Image (cartoon, rainbow, N blue to C red):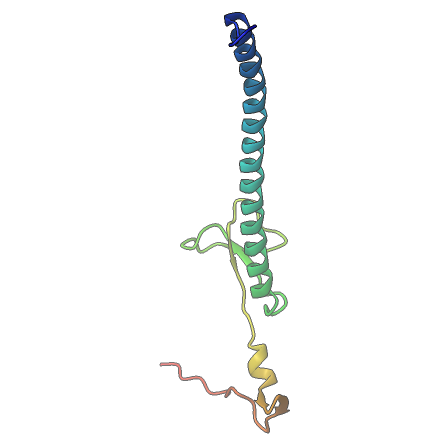
Length: 126
């Protein structure tokens, strides 16, 4: 009658467990690396999407024909957005105030047009 495992049985068990743990740790490491890469790409996509959305929202109120590109903020040379070289990095445009033109009041949940606009045509230039 045996009361314990033999040394050979213990060694074989430890070898089998070490092989299984080596394979499992490799799979877990690959999964973790893949998760980190996917997470980094997702965050980069969100930043790009937010930047593009910001630019589109700003350019939505640009007056046609006023969008130009500059090489840098301090450079005086400008070019049309269609004809500008790739090294021009700064966008400039003239926008309009759509909300001021609409000039609506919110009263009791409904929009009522004002008799006068929310902006004036006066400009003090000194």
